Length: 493
Image 1 (spheres, one colour):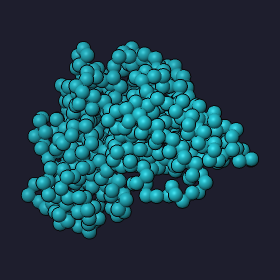
Image 2 (image 1 turned 120 degrees about the vertical axis):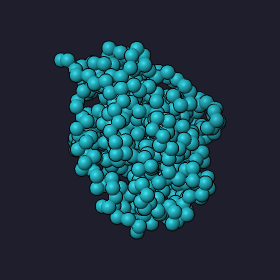
Image 3 (image 1 turned 180 degrees about the vertical axis):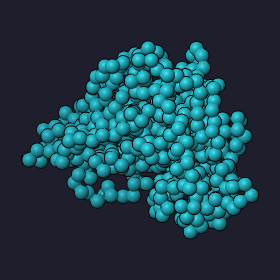
Image 4 (image 1 turned 180 degrees about the horizontal axis):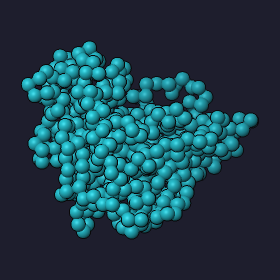
């Protein structure tokens, strides 16, 4: 069947429609705002999605509901914005009018000193306020994980977040008042057409549907599929890598679906960390803390579980716990699909069991047996918004005699891929769950892994950490109070 093609990208920028027919595949939203539109309130600090100075809100319709989320403009590509609403700090206060309540709260609470990071903080707090007008301290801190400030020490900014609701009411906010009109305009932009811009390798492609994606990628397997761009964005801004032609998929609602049945959960590969959090938190509460420490809020709003797996990074945070849970991936090529255990997807560093033209369509996670114990630990230099040096996941089940019936141990950061500790597992299975067994299994981890030394950690440190995490898991199953310390001490090393 013939697919209708459109040769422009269309989105709303603050209060205006933008329609672009000439866009570089690697043009970031930040550069577009500052250079093309002279909207200089959005700052560039790191160009890698780390400091939050470039934070803007991006709204999109999903299942008929308009939702605005904070994102990093420095690693978000303009080509991904079709059908979206971009809100920048420049539009918050009307010309010659009063400050927006979030801005006024920052002034009143002295939340700004040098001011460079302030627009990003304002936009992150704005995004929080739109979802939660009475946030707790923990919720405020979580919303601000992706924003760095070197002046204020954050306390004044947290006080500003608490003060926003006393300054203004959400139902008086212009964006809330205009929500129906914005929704109507975005709905009108959704025409179900494929978008094609550029020629040769320098092309941007937005498939009309998942079926269209499958057909396009099968025909052009060297194209780069981009979902959240939290990794690919850095390939461009930091490493100057060629990623063309680019196929954007963040607009495909079919890939963002999350389904539950009697056997488990199916996450569409395009579901973001934020979108998956409610169901993950409900069914796997052991993963809540890990989920809250994956990047900052902007990264969780953009990054996808499918992308975290597809990249094959040895330090991706989701593969170790998903492997421990027995997750599988659904791979699609054209009209065909195959399902494989996630642990088999990773072959070696930089190589995965994915055929040319094949992509991850979904991730299936079975429910955890009631008799099993599960834990996951993320070890980083900085507690929040940092990449793991080691990420360990442990799952054990016991028989009626106090022996280990089954065990799965998976680590990231210990090998060229996320990898199971099969030797340590073999020591555990059938053995009594006691100190001696744990020490034998800890010693076996040295046979399972030969970690590398890099700037995040030495090989010796990584192996010792892995062994100590196994010991910690054991002590936690025994209810040992020695491990019930502040996680800021025990997990950020």
